[in-house]
Image (cartoon, rainbow, N blue to C red):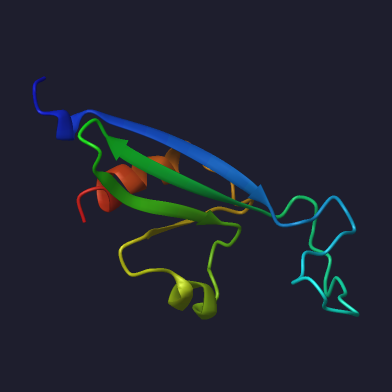
Length: 106
């Protein structure tokens, strides 16, 4: 294989939507900053990034913890990103397969 654009590497990272600390980040000098809503400890999103050996990137995928994502989530996604769906927000083999088949060659 001599075409470095076809040599790919991927990495996925999961983000917990529930803070483990009770600290809230805010600009310096702001007063009365509160944590508005505590999420579920198990609520997670996963982000998948793919890069080629040539340095090119493939459209990212974000896996949300929804089988039917709300329209607000769909509209907030950049148009060239791939939206994955699972009950947990974690990557599964079926979601990765769907991304490879439908998302990589957009």
